[in-house]
Amino acid sequence: MKRMNDENVLIPVIASTLLMGMIIVFVIYFIILYRKKQRNFQQERDAFKQALLKTEIEIKEQTLGNVSRELHDNLGQIAALVKINLSILKIEKEPENELLLNDSIGLLKNLITDIKDLSLSLKGENLNRFGLIKMAEIDFKRCHNMGKFKILFEHEFNEEDLAFEKQIFVYRMIQEIFNNILNHARATEVKVQIRSNLNQTTLKVQDNGVGFDTAQQAKGSGLMNLEERCRLINAELNLKSEVGLGTSITIQINSNAS
Image 1 (cartoon, rainbow, N blue to C red):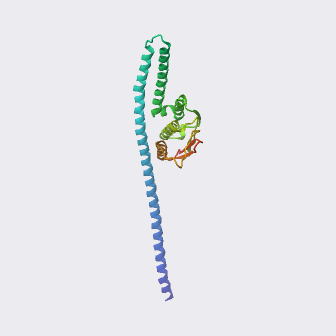
Image 2 (cartoon, one colour):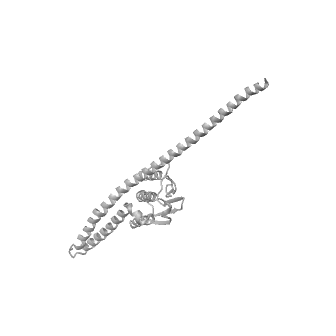
């Protein structure tokens, strides 16, 4: 009788243990399956983001390439023809007229140079040809020629540390930042640093301009463009500015991030 009672107790215990084991196995299987689906979803999302990034780059670079060709083939040629016509123009002997003609030829010469440099900076193919540092130096030289401010450029950058698509973004962000400085900062000196390693690339731009109150001033299109570009390449944007103390922008790009 006692043995039967023991068996009656043992059977439910075994059944409960088996049932609990099956539930645990099912839960573990469900967790594994869920995590696998999560990984697949993340991979698909990353692939989509990469495809979107590539498409956006191609569209923007194609547009800028068209503008570059228009500047070089049309405006550049027109300015060159005007310079030639002025060079062969016969001027009366009045010194004022001759001085004015020479000044006009000099201005046109500078204009042609600026058009060529601008055309070069807009065409994304040239970034692949000359590299990020050289293209940045070309833009800095053009800004320097305007006589607006002094530029100090430091770099320790290896192109192999950062994918070419992201280099395009870095270059366009440099142009966006300098456009903002030219239009708003009233700076006399700008410091630029580009540093990279296998894990991270850092762009830092500091100016000694008028600055602004980040808590009060609404975001302009330039800052919004920077934020959008950073979002597309998973970069971190850090902006610091104070009224009268200039502005500092630091952008950190994870080289291995999608």
